[in-house]
Length: 403
Image 1 (cartoon, rainbow, N blue to C red):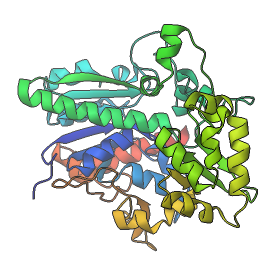
Image 2: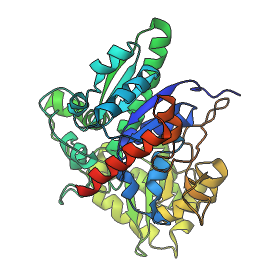
Image 3: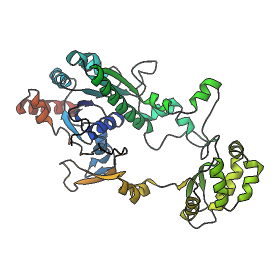
Image 4: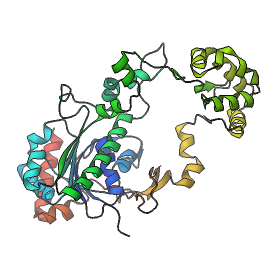
C-alpha cells in the first residue's frame, strides 16, 4: 500500500526540536526527507542526552525516517547543489534565525526562482516579521514571552517553565498541519507558498486567558495546583506524598464525588453550592479531600473508589511509570524503533510511538540516519563524484575543527 506522502520530497534545514519533529512527522507519512546537516557536528541535538552507546536518543526520535547529507552552507558550490535539490523538491523547512537563509542564498525568493511551486516553511522563535523577529530564541523564550510561563507555578511563587519544551512541540504540530494544508492547496491551485511558523504565536494561540485580558483588561495569573474558576479541578495530595488529579467541577461529577468519599452532606454546604463558590473556598475543599486521601495506605486505593463511582481522576504518574505503562504499550503509544547502523550493541530503542491513529494510513516510525549516511547517494545524484564528495567533506571538516 502506498503511503500518504509517498513521492513528496522535503529538504530539511532544521535543528534541535521544533523543525525536526515537524519533518519527522512528514517522514512518518511517507515523505522523502533529506536532512542537510553541517559537517562534523551535524544537528545540535546529536549532542543531547540521554545517550545510548554515546549517541543521542532524542536525535534519533526527532529525525526518524530521514536521509542525512553533510553540506557547508557557506560554500557556493554546496549552495548551487542545494538549489538543484530544491528544484526537485516539494517542501523546504528551515529553522535558522530570520534572515540567515537569505545570507546563504537559500531563502524563499531564491527557492522560488528554481521551483515556483515550492512550499517553504520557516520556523523561528518569534516569526519572520514584527518587532520581535530579530530575537534569537528557544522554547523557553517563547514560554516567557507568551504569558504561558506566568500561568505555571504557585500563586505566591515565581513563574515556572514547563517541564517539556511545549512551545517546540506546538510549533512542530502547527508546521506539520500548515504544510499539509499548503500541499492540499497546491494540489487544487498549482501554487506553492511561504509559511511563517512562530513558537511564540503557537503558545499565544493556546492561551485561553488572553480574551479576558485583552477585552476586559483582566489580569489572570497562575493558580498553582488548582483552577482559578473551576473546582474541584486540580491536584490533591495525601499525607503519604502521593498526588491525584480530581476533575469533578460539574454538578453531576460533584455529586458523584461527594457520594464516593462518604460526604453527601457537602451537597448542602453553602461554601460549595456552585462551581464559583467551590473555587472561592478551595482551601476548605482541599482540606476535606486531602484528609480523605490520607485515610488510605496508597493513592491507588482512593482512585479505585473514585473510578468505580465514575469520578474523573487519576494518579499523577512519574515519567518512568509512564514509560513502563503496559496499557500504553498495548495501544501503541509507546513502541520500539530501529537504530542506525553506527549502533553496534543495540538494534532498537524504546520510544514514544504514533500519537495519531489512522485506520487506513498509519504512521510508520523508521530509523534516523547516521551523520552524512546518504552523502554519496544524494550528492552523487546531483553530479558530485565520490572523489569530490570526499574532497569537500575533508575540506569542510578541517575548517570546522579549527573553529
